[in-house]
Amino acid sequence: MDVYVDSERPYSPTRRPTMIRRERREAKRRMVLLSLLACFLFLTLVAFRRPNSLMGDYTRQPANSTALAPSRTNAKAKSWFNGRPKSTGPDLGNSERRLPDSSLADLKNSSLGFEKVFVLNMPSRTDKLDAMILAASVTGFEFDVLEGVQGDSISKKALSGKWENRPGIEGVVGCWRGHMNFAKEIVSRRLSSAIIIEDDADWDFNLRSIMEYIALGSQALLDTPQDEAPRSPYGDGWDLMWFGHCASSSIKGDDRRFIIKNDPNVPPRQHRANYGDIPDMSAYDDNTRIMFFTAGNTCTYSYALSYHGAAKVLKYLSMDIFNKPIDFGLREMCEKKDRGFQCISVFPQIFGEHKPAGANERDSDIDPQNRSSVRIKGYSHNTVHSTRLNVEHLIDGRMDLLENQYGEDPHLEGPIVTEYRTGVEEQIPGS
Image (cartoon, rainbow, N blue to C red):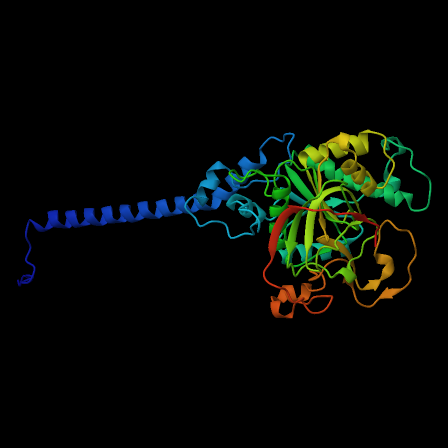
């Protein structure tokens, strides 16, 4: 009987231990690879969870008597900025003031630097809500819907004052209650700050960069210390910031002004629509915007309240005797010094009223007048590069097709520059 013998690898008693050692090395290699994979998955999970944990710390901050806007960059998160280049945001031309890195980071959140954005919308006006969702999305911010109120649904016992009985008063009462609900949301949810935008408002599609200059201006007006970052990117200590209005009064004797020059987003003088007192702008050219402490504005296309400001609004305009339109009430809050209510305004305004193409009767949910005419082309007040009028190009990313609704962009002397100074400024009658 023939026996097969492997002449190349003859059997040896020492081969079995060698095979065992080889299998052990392979097992160790597999364990190392599995350990590395587990570490990678763990680090990935931590990285994705980190923003939420920061936001959790942020939203649990207690409200206090100062105006606190959101700070997503708490002590741990701010360390992320250590060693990074200085901020590239706007700076103040006649001083060393500039926005801290933490303020710039807060301004890049999904709520324009505030803790929340609310849009006031009647449930029946789904058309306006659709338009707002689209405009906010292409601009890069999110909002919560605050449902509007029908005036006739409010019990008379819920009104602190006696309202005159006249046509359209239900709309005025409902508007007042809707804005009270805005203040109530801030207080009940203990939000540090929030901004409200009415559902027929429009804004420049450069809103994000505009708000950086607004933040720098408010920090300058509030004399924010430059050696420490404020809790709010808009500075601390304000109660109301009025961004969208149709008239604005400066405080007599208060000549502090934050001036933004060479701003291509400022509407030309002949295209500014206002229905009351406005600051004297004769000392400035058509491309200048100013910020100042206001004695009160008219119209409420958009404004922001701090927690402290919202609490005072509820106290004076809901609990105390009050029977006027909401903008009159907010104006009184700014005007009466004994209420300790600090208001900052922007002129020209950065939010304006939009009039869409179509039947004019769609414009207002307050005004009961019957308008049978049809508007062929929409337009927006006090808005140069309208988001709503350019929404189709913004959806397609065709930045080369974006239009200035007033014609060609102005020829500017140079880039945007800012200045903080005092000067004589007289109040002039409304235009």
